[in-house]
Image (cartoon, rainbow over all chains, first blue to last red; front, top):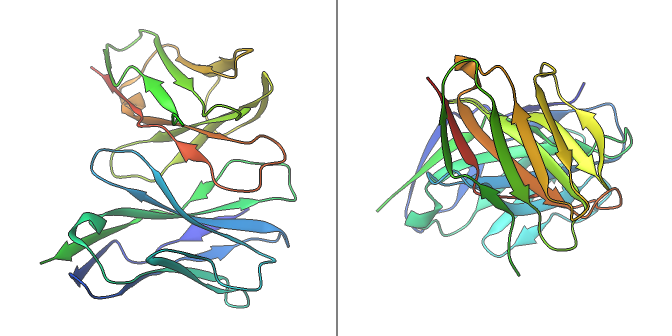
Amino acid sequence: AQKITQTQPGMFVQEKEAVTLDCTYDTSDQSYGLFWYKQPSSGEMIFLIYQGSYDEQNATEGRYSLNFQKARKSANLVISASQLGDSAMYFCAMRERGTGRRALTFGSGTRLQVQP
Amino acid sequence: EAGVTQSPTHLIKTRGQQATLRCSPISGHTSVYWYQQALGLGLQFLLWYDEGEERNRGNFPPRFSGRQFPNYSSELNVNALELEDSALYLCASSLGLAGAYGQYFGPGTRLTVL
């Protein structure tokens, strides 16, 4: 069974600094996708970034980058130049492509607080 | 382009009643997913619909059911409500079976069972 682990329940970062949110995963499937979502206090889940298991380069989207280390089964999210609006819950998620399942399996989340 | 929409925003019910939640996917998306997020917990997969058919369901009892309409909108029904059903219910849509990329979420329906 697939599993996502986020070991940091909460993180603090100073405004304008970079922060890394950890995510490790466990799967027996060779083909899978990894996702990061942001959930502000309003509750909506905002899609941030995607990494496919066969992608050779780390995904980047603006200030977000995904540090993908396949052998270690880790997919850490790096946020550069943190802003106050980045304060939110962040969820790592995975979908195994080979099983026919399309639903995402989520980690327990990391609450990021950006301090001025 | 309009995103995923959900209604109602908030819903208050009492134990034993039925709740109906609605979701409209992004235009062109044929897959709809339902997730439950209980307070302080992560998201748990409930149901997946594509092209009008239920494709997969999570580890939830049969009183959680739903359907997808010809216009790809979806409805989640929760029968015989229990206190622990109180949660944020999130709907997401994607490009269907061939879609390998992100699921896009709606704002959620917060269900409170008294």
